[in-house]
Length: 295
Image (cartoon, rainbow, N blue to C red):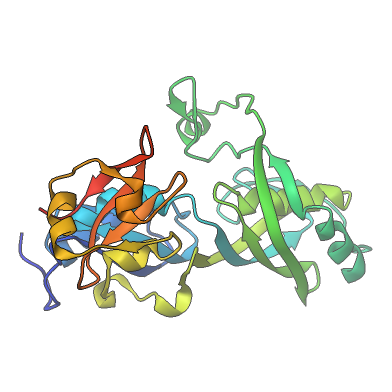
């Protein structure tokens, strides 16, 4: 499969690409198209972004697809618009209206005050349109069949939930949150906390961990970042050429030889800064590779 445009070759250890996803594409759509754009079948993403949402989607390319496990749990940041007075079947603008409320008396100060209650560690009930599996079937598949099932609440953490008015009954929300947070659920829950209902009118993801929207580009213009850059949130260690050979062979090493302690994971870099592997704690103060990219 040949690339559709000229771009640098995929490094042997793989790379990351930060895509600014456009509305109307599923995350799977982006991956499928990226395989043609990048000229490889080895492409994956670090976490689903709703079809109508835009913004940061982190792709692993080549061998770096094996590193996505270390990226998927990173915190996320979003900016979106919450419309008071209307609930929908999907909790966002794509769904059918299921209820309406007269919330014209709700003040901006009341909305801001209500948002404060969602800061910190909270629990959310996943929406029926999510990809979570219940009894082996994804919730959105059950929703398409017209079924609704009980969903256990999930713990999430909201670090920021700032609100500003956009127009009567519509508020822009800035959210920093843990992985697994549903912003559409946050919008719906805010509406209920105000004595009515609400839905998410639009959503844009502005960051995944240290990857920001400033680094993102439309798929066709997306550039490769070194594999090591994708693990910048972890404590990396560097090794010399001889140790790099051992790393390439996937050897279990004493933690003292790597200069690490604890549980890891630790990205291991070669003399030139290339990511060779990711090691984690093993028995008897040793470390073993979870992923080996060199060799």
